Image (cartoon, rainbow over all chains, first blue to last red):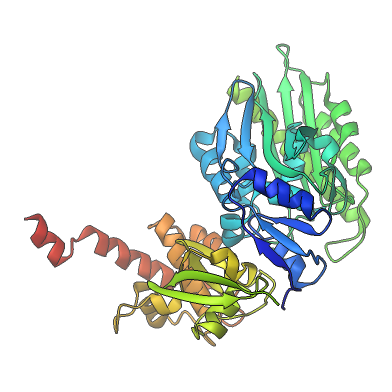
Length: 291
Length: 171
């Protein structure tokens, strides 16, 4: 398959990228790893007049920690996130998500920023970022804008990013005391998109009850979403199988799946519930182990 | 139609080309440079038959533009053997019958080389995960896994025993 014709530029600074993006507003697309965009170009589902390759723009790679945040540059590859976050079991949720995306070649080149800007309704990162209430920072010629992950995903392949903005980094709040997180998904076969996936974060109060919860669900609606009914069902409860089942059922009920090759609606709701239960079990045991 | 001039190294040799921005890396490798060992299977980023190394990192060449590879070092299956001596992975696929039709083999070998560079002693499970982006529709994966295990063993052994010239230089 041959993509349509387009122009290609590889600016060396973010300011240059932003200037070109503004000059060619509406016809330019940003290119990072290309593992979402190039397949779309080949199918001619996207026909931009210009690709702006961010490869030479400095400052968009890597992971750093501040007092309040874990900051992931938009162009950081899934493989790089997996390597950093699996070291010493420091960020197990991020390691689980990164290691399960696509296949090794996809993880070598695909980036977290590209993935969330593409906003596939069954992609993995959005569920995690919603569960963790991450902030997504973007830059335009006018300055920086921060969008919470819960307000970022608007519809299938649609985000709150403006056409003149570049997504620059993801800011995840540092893990509080007695908090744990986990990601569970079910896929038909290796390298497939999730049939259903659920990312969960729980924090425990001194009395052992759940004081804070985040549940992000993917694959079972027009976009990844916060399962707020599940979160409400968890707050104030002591962790137990019964509590997890109630929360899982709420996540399933809040899903809006469509029947397709990955299964009928009833099955997908059940899988959204089950993935939430499994993630809750692991997140809770991690929260207890971390102390 | 505007073209862009790109310069890259392919299997250690500097190559230049004038390409349309939409030209895929796999088409550059096959149609412009004539290196047809890199195969096009699914053309949709799934099958891995087009796997090559870009700056030492395995990539699906059907999912990268030639202009993205401007300035990069590319390695294809043609760059694996040392003259008449097969690469341990090529020898492994030969010895273990790691192929039937052979269409997936170049991509399998390039991805296996990438896996072994990261993890010289992978378990069977790690090999299977490592080649999960490469599809074989003939054989199942049993002999492919054996081929990679054989190569991993030989490459570890070679790494432990210093080559004669290195030993001579060290003494």
